[in-house]
Image 1 (tube, helix red, strand yellow):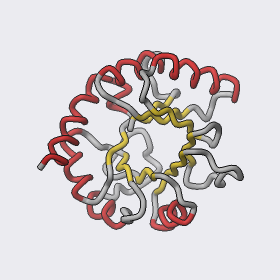
Image 2 (cartoon, rainbow, N blue to C red):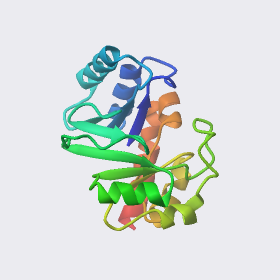
Image 3 (spheres, helix red, strand yellow):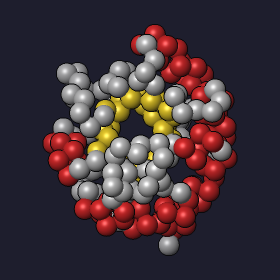
Image 4 (tube, rainbow, N blue to C red):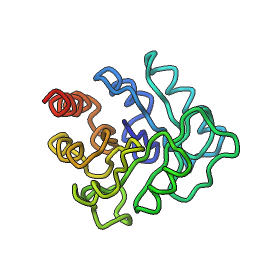
Length: 185
């Protein structure tokens, strides 16, 4: 899963997302909370226009058919077709399970420059403690291709990546290779 953060993108986000999709990315969470709603909608439309069929675009902030909620946002009164939540503690994960979220991001697993206020890093053991069998968990925060196996070994369903993909979209292929290596063994 690619976290497409508008504020962190070094180039236009649609360009980055298109390149990431060319290298196999199929899930994107658009994070543009600091943009006005109209600009968020325009950016989401621009991403949909460049993403191939079969790609999922999830909007952070609770708008649209697929949404990603922060750890503190209320669950929408009308349930979207796909709902994820960011989690940093067991209480956050328990809430996501109780709300019947479709997935959760658990972070930070490793040291990360993008979210220095959330920590300390959980590490694989801390991640394992936050991966309930009833909820697909994506490990987020400092996850590099060589750390994918540790995340999946700890019980994560997959990984979510922001910085490395925003800086170098072709790195998606390395993440997919690492995922494939773990799941095929």
